[in-house]
Image 1 (cartoon, each protein chain N blue to C red):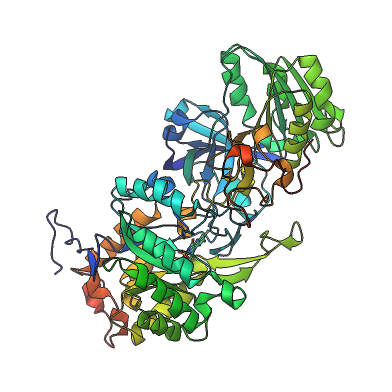
Image 2 (cartoon, helix red, strand yellow):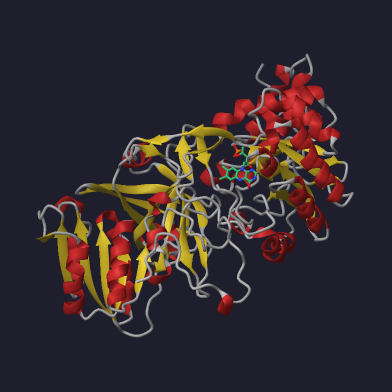
Length: 329
Length: 301
Ligand SMILES: Cc1cc2nc3c(=O)[nH]c(=O)nc-3n(C[C@H](O)[C@H](O)[C@H](O)COP(=O)(O)O)c2cc1C
């Protein structure tokens, strides 16, 4: 028998996730760059009730982004090269962060720069602002000192950026490093980031892809190639989470890549993610975050799970889930 | 009013010449709607592999069944083909109403409503609204051929005048709306142009209107939108704000209706070098000190 809740249904699982200085009411977040400023999302989702809103990567200066077309639909996915359009740090601090705070949302602020120094400056200035729940380091940016090669591809470069952010951020603001799947060994980069002081890791960022428009005979994106995301990349993301959890089971992980349903979120948790983020699917369903959260609650309750944290990394245990507890064995 | 996400039941799917007109029961959208706004529809069902919403101008809303919304499209790719294959009683995930509606003048002025193909659809509810304000409405509608001019009959019935042009001459005069525009403007004594058409047409219309010192309210095509809700920042175009500074504006949230003279039509598809945050861009110290340069490929005429 499953424990019964007040209404006679299964007892709802405790969705709270605590990890060091991080304390979130739910493990479901938005993924960076997919929730607008938060205002657009708030029309469809109560931003105070999801785990956190991860912002579009904030840069020191305003950015116009890349020319349009910036997005192209691909099978179960999306190719994008938006180019981090945003108001820059000042605009973000003046308008966007206070708004999130005023709505009771927790803000995971993603930061992006071209050098460790820029990252450090962002972290230091954001540490002085109210309402930063955590920092996420977008390592997918081009490294100015390495001919534009992304930091995420090199353990040394990634570590240097993480060290700069951790060194400049207030001690009680957790720092997550965001990893790319486009490396021969994601664990190597993960370890370099943790050694450099990352409190947690986010994965995955998009992976390079291309699509050609059969009508115009030209690449579908103005930037020619773009980053692939959405359910199409989910198995890649789950593999990354799995591998990093195996190597670093105590490090909090945010899993993302094509989360569409509560079951998908559960998959990431089982692989070892403490938290999950919803990105591309928000373009298809702007209320997806609340829905995924509700569905995850239902999935957990149906399996008699008391706390969402109980299932984190469960797939790594040799013994699977007892099928009869589903009630249909 | 804020948009809503609803599950709307398909009431009717009709062929209208080369196009499909679909009516969906969506009271919460119908009651909020203002002419010029659009809806974003999920296609392919709940497990769809097509993640971009398809966005459409609302053609009309009606009070029956608590409120219905009609939109018109040409089934051109798998997503819109899936929609065209929907039947009455199917259920769609619809978000709306989205975007900035057409502003309507305070005074009873003479309005020209210019549309091409399915993009003409939003002009008819606008015409009704303008009519309610005592404005005279003239239509200039175009399309490739007779079956691709949307709403010619309604335009003739409800407009003060209606000029139709087709590329092949199968209806009205042979040519394009831009060919006919100068004549129509003079005959109709137009004060304001409302235009809804593909970007190259909007660009020509705005260039012409400038010569006649006429304001244009331009509705840019929703086909470039991915989410329709402002989340993805995919559908940007360079727009000069009231302060004269160019920013990359999302067509879905800052538009789809823009003041024609504010859009930098020649720079669409680029990032003009003087746009806020363009590569190498520096914040202006004060407007007076700013170099008087025009951007990118645009001519300063
Ligand atoms: C349009 C778009 C914009 C994005 N912007 C950012 C960004 O600003 N910073 C970042 O770290 N990741 C960004 N991402 C990557 C997502 O946060 C996420 O890592 C990736 O898309 C995989 O998750 P998903 O499949 O749920 O979208 C962006 C993705 C998309 C599709």
